[in-house]
Amino acid sequence: MLYTMRKATLLISILAFGAFGMLADDLSDYQAMMKAAAGANGAANGAVAGGDVAAVAAKAKDAAAAFDQMTAFWKAKGKDDAVKFSMSASEALKAAASATSIDDQKAALAKVRPTCGGCHMVYRDGSKFKGM
Image 1 (cartoon, rainbow, N blue to C red):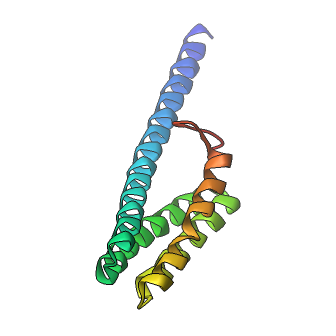
Image 2 (spheres, one colour; image 1 turned 45 degrees about the vertical axis):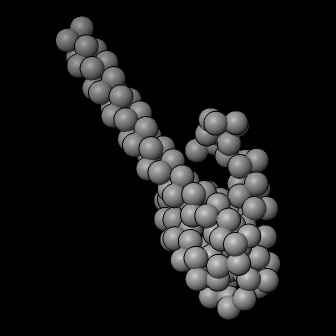
């Protein structure tokens, strides 16, 4: 009986550490997506200030691709509210990428920040993730 309990304890420990490792990988992957999205979105907004339609389009397209990855991440987690936030940001960025004037790009990019803020209110506590 003692031998069986040791095996069970060992098995549970291995599974728990494996699950923790997968969670850490998920968070690392998600952080990389967030950094890519934030960097590209910031660059797109910077290009608006310079009046560079082509640069805004390119960076908005990059940011939209990162938000599309985040949408898939949140779908896999079953977090419908986060899926909506990331899809909304992606759609706004795609609109900015396809816009032909700085004013239209600026208007589209203005819709991104509120979706980011809404998701961060639910899933971020400063630099820490919550609710995942």
